[in-house]
Length: 159
Ligand SMILES: [Zn+2]
Image (cartoon, rainbow, N blue to C red):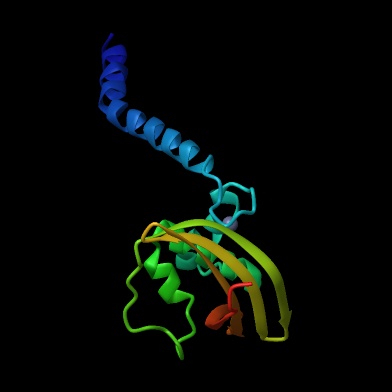
C-alpha cells in the first residue's frame, strides 16, 4: 500500500513536467510545419532553420546559396543576430535595424562558388510602405575558416 501511495505521489509530482513536455512537443510539431520563407518548399526546420539553430553549435551553411537563403529567411523572421554573425567582419554594419518590410518571396537566379569566393544572384520581392518592390541583387560571399560570409551586394536596376 505504501508503495502504491509513493508511486501515485511521484506521478502527481511529475505531472507538471509531463504536461510541459507534451506542450513542448506540440510546439515543436507546430514549428516543424512552418514552410521555409526562402521558397524552397521545405519545412523551416529542414531548411534554413538548420543553419539558424546551427550557428550556436558551429554548424554553418555549406554553400553561398544556402547562406544567402538562410539570410533571407533571417530577414523574414527578424533574426538580427544571425544576420550580423554571417556578415563578413570587413563589411558588417555597426548596427542593423530591420525596416518595416513585408517580405513576399525569394527567387535565386544564379549561384556559383569557386574556391573560397561565391556569388548569388537573386530577386527578393517585398512590400515597403504599401508599395510592392523588387530587389534584384548579386551578392558576394567569401569562405574563411570553413565558414561562408556575406560580403556585399550589387543591385541590378529593375528589369
Ligand atoms: Zn530555407
